[in-house]
Image (cartoon, rainbow, N blue to C red; front, side, top):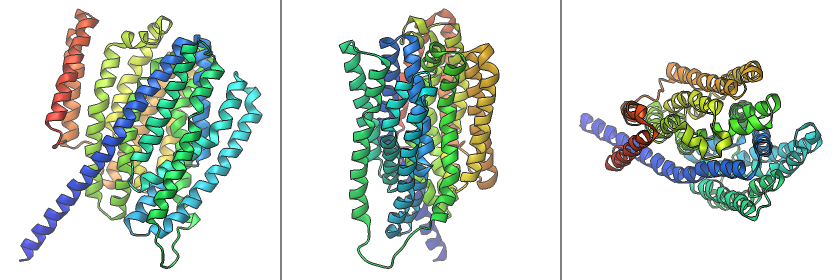
Length: 490
């Protein structure tokens, strides 16, 4: 009888694990639809700016948007991760009454700091090469911070739809419509392009606030004893993530600002165009990571490391399956990719930037959502140290290499920082929690993607780019059929 009870318990646990993976997959799929729109939208924004503006003007736009995103990361204070973590844990443990205290602890400080940061940008605008653009982005900075934090709270409830509809779809489409209208009207300038890009953050923030308010009121208990999370507990987790979030975005955007400052706005435009393919991988990783985060937090809170490991490994296989074909295809057809943005962006340095970044980003994808897993395990202080080291590597190498090597030096710096930022936390997760991304499904995805999109197209590449493109297209078709055929197992 005991053995039957044990077997039943094991079967129930396995079924619960499978259901958790299915839930993660559903949430990840919803996010991936949005990520596809957002990633392609990001490429389209880069393309529109590149073709509508001169390289110097486009460089000013890219630098201004990088300042906007970096300032937003500072002003958010790490609250998106903190809100996902705490809302997910409280909801999992039936403490919905304490969610209100978490929202107050996270949202009010972020709102105050975002307004202070915007005011600081307004005062510091004359120090930048394009002060008018900096003043413009400062006005909309609080809306961006509010949108990110409010949507993060909805993800704590395991709701992926609001983030997809409001941010990835709504905001992205609104940006593209605005930029496209300006380009067609022939009124493109750095100021008008920047305004069209930054304006959609305002209605997106309003929509996010409306949705979260409805969801919170529906789940808040009507009676019972007061329950709250202390500020010390909330910020003990969130504060290290605040600094880590700034450093993380610094890894992604600071190099554009440094290229603009050390090499000029024209090279900054070239560097931005050459590196934009990375957006696709980042969006795919982010989409899966947003679905994994609340479930990983709940699994770690419930003392279920095996469930967290299963989530980590399955999600890494999905990321590899989505990103390696893109990275390898861009690497093999670098000149075709660069020519999309105009003939002035095709050249030896831009091609080298692509080739340097492709292997680094492939390693990053193979590590999966390592950053999110470390945070959801509660090790945000480790995460802060890791990303700080990576940022120091990035800044140090940029200062050393950009003056002599230009955009190629920036690519080397970014690649080195990406490797540090993924391999160090991976070693920590593996050693401390026994968590690693290399399950059977991940190994199959790595091998199949490398063979189909790397080895085989590379074999025919000496015969010309058209045959290389044909080989990649055939691999893509076979890949899509395989993913569809084995979708239940995946």
